[in-house]
Length: 331
Ligand SMILES: Cc1cc2nc3c(=O)[nH]c(=O)nc-3n(C[C@H](O)[C@H](O)[C@H](O)COP(=O)(O)OP(=O)(O)OC[C@H]3O[C@@H](n4cnc5c(N)ncnc54)[C@H](O)[C@@H]3O)c2cc1C
Picture 1: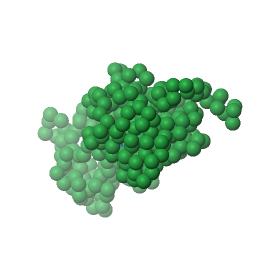
Picture 2: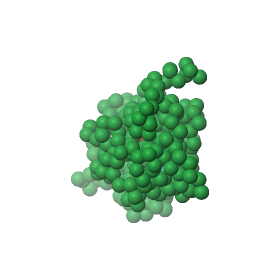
Picture 3: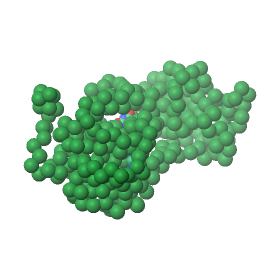
């Protein structure tokens, strides 16, 4: 059983945890990053590796996987211990000596940064009785390889930014893309709605899917009912991609000895990103404060703030560099 002591343990290897690990490297903290999935990248790798991200500073457009690859390269500039396929099952102790228990063993850490995002996430499913039989054949909750949709008739279901993003991403690949939503208005960035309006994506609103049946040639026919009327539309498709959001499971914290204040299942933090427990910080989607905007860009800033605070908590005499140039110039 390993009993190493780290300056900082980062729990969760999504984009925010990865950037925090790089930033901890700049501060010369001995750092471990623990991720329960087999690969780092969090929601970006798991849910939308091929989607184009437009709102990360410095990139006019970058796919999810490219961003994660960039973050991996940046993180590996420093000797960070990256552990994948290990779930943190318990955290106990106090500032200076937290005990981190994972599926693979026990380690110790002076400080802890929680970047567990939305915890374990599962998609909200299509509420149609026989939907399950079409899953992974015609019905998708995560976008698999884009090449799968080449020349296909595809319907995206959902009314948020992610649904519009997916529809626009499929537009140049698929034969025809429908976007179905139960309201006439989309809950999305004005920019995304304008791009949608200018695209060839056919908007099918306000409709709700009522039934799926198998159709010739491994296709499916979806029976759509218009909201507040008895009108129906039958559309035959190769694929349906449902994006009704995700149900997050934060029960991961429930079994920890360490208990901190939560705010609607997120971790409450102060302006230094510290939780209600001294030496324990949170950043990214899991961190909660007034006015929080859950974006990768905000998570990156929170990670830098949290790592600075953790560095001083781990060692009050810490005089880490504030700018990356001071490290690189000294290399
Ligand atoms: C379809 C979609 C499109 C999006 N598009 C954009 C966009 O264009 N721009 C943008 O800024 N944001 C976008 N987002 C939001 C963005 O993905 C999140 O804000 C971002 O992923 C948050 O990063 P994170 O590192 O905080 O958490 P996550 O990405 O959720 O990563 C958390 C990681 O922690 C791990 N973990 C959880 N519990 C444990 C545990 N106990 N032990 C070890 N590991 C654990 C999880 O496995 C996960 O890998 C989108 C989200 C979705 C779903």
